[in-house]
Image 1 (cartoon, one colour):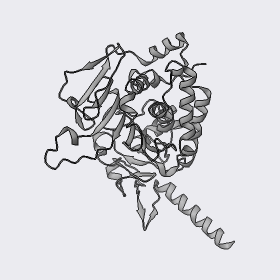
Image 2 (tube, rainbow, N blue to C red):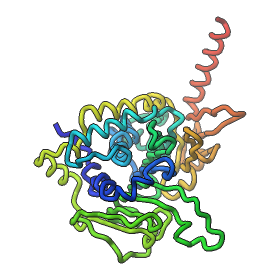
Image 3 (cartoon, rainbow, N blue to C red):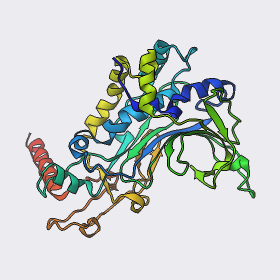
Image 4 (tube, rainbow, N blue to C red):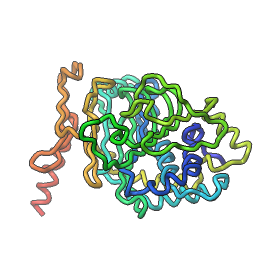
Length: 377
């Protein structure tokens, strides 16, 4: 049985392990907690879930893309390099070791959101009443840590959402920089140090591996890849494209066709083993259970999101950067007589409850009843 995750067929994703092996002499000294500041694995979409609500409302963004696509990329970035990249058993075993080393991901390691039109789309496609509310997240940012001496304390951020400002996917390793330029802030020494596995779309459009020039000049031995030296005037994650060494496939191939060719060749390392699948759900299921009654932050969608979804990492916890958000009925463009309001943040050090009005009243009543019964006991 070959369990397909089409992300493993993407040329850039398939290039992660070979890139790490080919550039081992550069990466070995810096691929650790002393040099890596953080890891980001991001998949942003501009589309909504319209037309897929029957599926999407059951699963949400975490099951849709984080548990599989982004988690697989994370394992490729962090797993121990196999001695033989063609040895499927060794590759899969090394991936499994990462799952065993991941610290549990709890409620305080995640934030969720939902674009504002989603409620109406659910009501229309699932034939629900105007009072029906879904708390299925369409945006999520999750913070993970690996309990391993090499990666101890490095925040790994996995982020995805619909109705965001652009369509783009990438994995970025950001390195620490202890140089501060007093005057020449455009000096190459002061610019971000990063390696980017760029899946495609966004400002660059094509898939590529990018290494900022203040790190090292990478080696890519694969004849099917080429170095790009003529660049358009675009920026990629904070740097002009000219500040990177850029490599891209000579011919772009579709992910599913790549995986089908691997099936015929009997290459199992591009697929999900039973052990890895169970280990992945072992990581994600407790988080999903803890978020089952959490109310997502409502965001308008697209460029109007502004800084609503900006996140802050403090220690081993993640939160939205803006403490309190209030979205009125007028802002929602709604006509419901009951109105709509969301509040998120803290009051006197205690987490505030975020809920639609009907649910908020129900939860308040339940809390009062529970407190009364506890007092009576």
